[in-house]
Structures are given as C-alpha cells and as structure tokens.
Image (cartoon, rainbow, N blue to C red; front, side):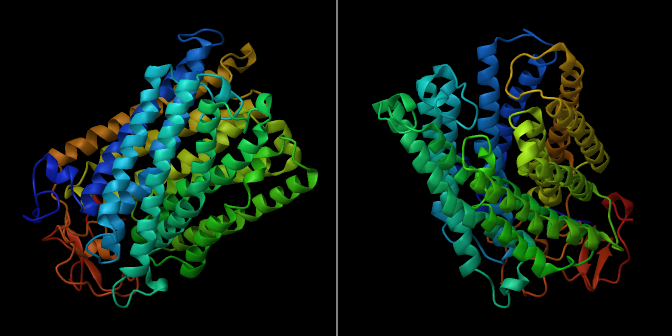
Length: 554
C-alpha cells in the first residue's frame, strides 16, 4: 500500500514564516491556489447577489446603485483576481518545474514577489468597497470611471495596476524557466503540451500587460490631476480608452483560456491513454492563438464609430483566430477516437469542456460578423458567450486540472463518486444559468440593466435557479476536497497512469522534486505501463493488469 513520503514539500519545514518566506515553487503554487479560490468565492457570492436581484422585475432586494456596484466588483474580482492568475499562478507554478524535471523556477525570489504583488493589488481592489465601491463595470469605461465614484475608481485601478506587475513577473519567470531549465534530451518537441500552453500565455503576459498598466496609469492621472486624456469635457477621447483597454484585454482573454486549453491536452491524452493526435499542430496552435490575440481587439468596437474598412478587417481576423482553436478541438476529438477512455472526474471535466467551450466558440461567430453583432452588441447574448468561453472554458478546465493534479499536490485521493456528482451539477447548473441568456440576448434584453420588462421574467428566473445549482456544486466540491486532506486515501505516485515527468516523483513531491535529473523521452509514451495493485498506482515495467474501477478505468 502507498504511504505518504516522510520528506515532502509540505513537511520539509514548518511554521508560518517557512511558508510566508518560501522560495519553493510548490508552496507558492499552493498559496496562489488558496488565494485565488478565495477570490473566486467572493466573486461567486457577488454573482449570486446579482442573479437574486434579477429574479423578478423591479426592486427585489437591492437598489439600482448597489446592483451596479455588485456586478462591477463581480467582474473585476473574477477577471483580475481569479481567472487571469489562477491557472498560471497556482497549477502553473506547481506543475511546470516538475514537468521539466527542474528543482524550481528560474527566479524563485521573483516568483514569491509576484505572489505578494498579487496580494497587495487584490487588497487594494477589495478595499475600494469601504470607499463606496465601484459602479463602472469591470472594463472601467470612460467617462463613467472619470466622473463617478472617483475615489473607488482610483483605488481599484491602482490595485489592478499592481496586479499587472505580478502577471508580468510570472510570465517572465516561466519564459526563462522553459528556455533555460529543460533537462538534457527535452527538445521543444518533447515538451508536454501543458508547457506549450503556459509558454504561449507567458509571452502574452509579458508583451500585453504593460499596455494595460499604461492605460490605467493615464486613467489615474486624469482622475487625480484633472488632465484631459479620455474625458471629452477636458478635450479627451473616451474611444481612445477603449482602444487601449481592448488592445490588452483581448490578448488577456487568451491569458485566461490558453492555460485551460493546455490542461485539456494533458487530461485527454492521459485519460484516454493515447498520445495527442497531431502533437505539433496542437503545440503551434497555442502560439498562433497568442499571436492572433493581439490583432482582433477592434471587434469589441464595431458600434464605437470606427471605419467600415477597419471593422471588416477586424471581423476577418476574428474569424481567423477560430482556425487554431478548431485545430485543438479536432485533434482532441481524434485523440479520443478508439482510446482507452477512463471516465474519472478529470476526464469528465475535459468532456464537459469540449461541450461548453464548443458552444462558446460557435456563438462567437455571431459576434464576429458585422451584421449580427450590431443587433447583439451589449445584450445578454454577449454575457452568455463570454461566460461560455471563460467559465465553460477556463474555469471548467481548471477544475479538471485541479482534480487531475490534486493527488500529486496533496498526497491524498478525493471521494470519486462525490466528485462525479459535483461535475454533473456544474454541467447542469452552468448550462441552465447561461444557455437561456442566448435567447434573452437575441430577443433584445440588454446586459447590465437593473430592471427589465415582464416578458423576460421567465428567462431570468431560469438563469437564477441555475446559478444556485452551480453554487451547490461548488459547495459540494469544496467539502469533499477539504475532507480528502484529512480522511482521503493515500495517493500513489501515479494514480492515473500519466506519462509526463510530474508522475515520476512521489505524491506529494519532495522539496527538490527529484533526487537526480529524470530520464526524458517522448512526453506521451504509455507503452510498458501497467497497474501495480501493491501501490495502487501505475508503473513502468510492472507486470500487472488494468487498474481497478475506483480509478475510473473502463
């Protein structure tokens, strides 16, 4: 039977300071995970508050001004404090060096500094609540952000400005780590696809985030010094803010989704026990998505007065970005074909991702086309599309990755039946909440509105019920994951039969990951692996047979 290694990163040194001042990438990853999940909880509560208010027309329980503050903070916290930093900061920090066979990232001190910058920026953003909150929407559009709730705006924007440095430091660290710390024999085309996705994400973080920093700094200068930059009353141009903001924020969409796409490649390969079909195409598609992300910001501004020619160019580029994304979807599907699929919880999240992210991508076609976007712009159709891409994509993928690597991170297995039930509730709750919003949007229901005509009541009520189902799923998930830390079965080194390097060390990993640099071969070579009933895990060269049903093998 498996036992927890006596010397692992959790027990290597104890005490608050040993964690607060740690340079161990694994501990920093765990701290990121806990912190970003707390931000997700806060943003989720705010979302429930918004959906509760929209259950019926008119005043349900909060005023219009409070409603504006609720949905603004929900969006800002969810985007800047959770979705952007969660996968790179948490799973990326923990898994990336082990996948490389390295002892740590290239710059451990910079890694710790990026976490504390995240804490400082997040604290400033949340502290704005005490100054009256923010009612501009998470995009901080001018002139709203230069005229209303100015103290709250400056506080939140300063926080996001600091968060930008955290993102840049993390991206820079990952780029250098992948370039310089690959072990002998790990060429670029022997990198696991998770590392290709994180590498592409890091490039976007380093190149795009400074644009956001400059934009927000200009907004702070305008709000505090009354210098006309974006405010038309002082000779500024509010559309200029939109260009600056979306030049960063559309690449930021891929900061959110590229790590999720990378996780799905690992889940589908591991749990169908097949190498990814068309490895090089999937790898290069990550880089292509990152590159296209810098060229399509104008599709957010089809109704902002830009020229017809520019709108046509941005529309064509928007359709082009679907090509590398479609490459991934087709290659994942081809990988599943005739694979030995294990319907364990991580794989269920991967299959859920294919469904929800597919809907998100297909509905983006209507928003990329000039004729239909004019009708659908700023309606609930956009809300539904955004959430199908961000939550149906990035968040679902993160949940799959978290369940996939949870045994490696904690050394414990979670309750598989409860995990599958939570996945089912997430699927039902998510689609109930957001699919109906496509219908609302196509019928003309505008987003961000506090009130609505009675004809939309049934759609809002269905959406609100779905949000509560989703909340139940997350409460259940938190329950069995926390319980696994105390009562979960001991996890073997390789519970899923994975072939990448992180499955070659103990669970949880030792402080330095590997005593010696591991041997590097093809990243998705499953030949010669068999289940060992004595350890409860998979090993190379063991003469055992297929794993038990408790591991979800079929």
